Image 1 (cartoon, rainbow, N blue to C red):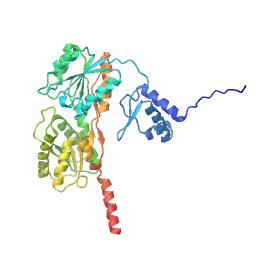
Image 2: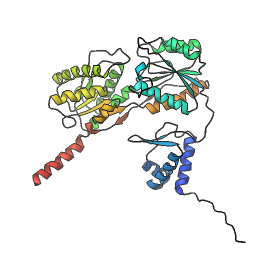
Image 3: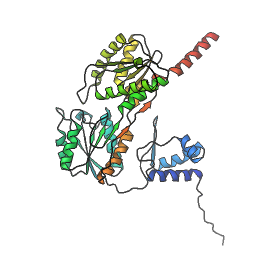
Image 4: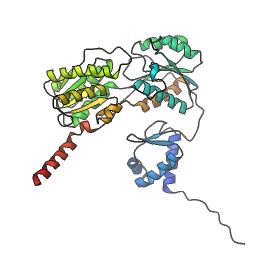
Length: 395
C-alpha cells in the first residue's frame, strides 16, 4: 500500500501580510471607512516588495474587506469580525430639498448625510431620517426630534442643518427630552453638544499655503457672498500669509456684500453673484498671482471673467476652490475636499460612546483634503513651455 502524505498549503509572505492587515482592521487600527496607507508605505512597514503588498491587498479586496476608489485611494469596507453593535436605532435630522431625496448628492450636506447613513448601517445601526425641509418651509427642529422619539431612537444626529436655527435650541430640547444629541457640520460651530466638523479656518490656511508653496506672493481671497464659512476660510488664508512671513497686505479681499441666508441656492444664482464680484475684484485689486476662492462656483465664475480679460490659469495666476464639485474637476481646478468619510467615521465612534453613557465625548475638527489639479501646476507648465521654446529654436 502506497504511503499517503498529507498536503498542506504553505503560507506565503503575502498571506502573512494579509493576515496581519485583517487583524489590524478587526482591532480598529484601520476603522471602517478609513483610508489605508499606500502600497509603498506598507512595503516599508513590512519590509517586503510592493508586489507582495499588492497580492495581500488583492486578497483583502476579494473578501470585500477593502475597496479601491480611483483617484482617492483604498478604504476599509468592513471588518471580518462582526460584533454586536450598541448603536441600535439612530435618528438623523437634516434639511434636504424633497427634489434631492433618492437622487445623487448635490450638496455637501446631502453627501455627508448619505455617508453617515451608510457607515452607521455598516456598523450594525439602524437609521431613521427626519427631514426638516418641505417644499414650503423648514419645520422646527423640536418637531423632528419628537418624530424620532416616537420611533424610540437611542440617539439623534443633526447633519448640517443649523444655519437657520441655533444649535443651542436643538441641544436644549434634546436635553429636555433626555435623548443624546450629536452634531455633524459642514462648517465650524460653537455648540455645547458633541460635534464633528470640517475646519474651515484650517481649510483656508491649507489652500493659501498651497499657493504660497507654488511661489505666489500676492494673493486674492474671493467670495461671491458673505457667509460664516467664507469668513472662516478667509481667516485661515490670512493665517497662512502670516505664517509664511509675508506682509499683511500680501492678501487682498473681495467678498460679496450679499449675505446667503437660504439653506440652498441655485447654481445659476451663485454664478450671477460671483460674476459681479469678479468684475469688482479686477477693477479694484492691485494685482495678484494666486487666488483662493471660498467655493468652486466662485472659482468657475472667476476663471470665466478672467478669460474675458485675456488672463488664463495657470499661465497668469494660480487658483484654488472649495468643495471639489464635478464641474471644477472637469475644468482641472485645484479644490479643497470636505473630509466626508472621516467625519462619518468619527461620528460613529462618538455615537458608540454616547449610547454607552460616556460623558467624555468631545467635539472633533478635521482638516480638508487638498486635491491638486492643473490650475496650480504653473511650474510644470513652465517646464513644458521652455521645452517647446527650445524645440522651436532648434528647428
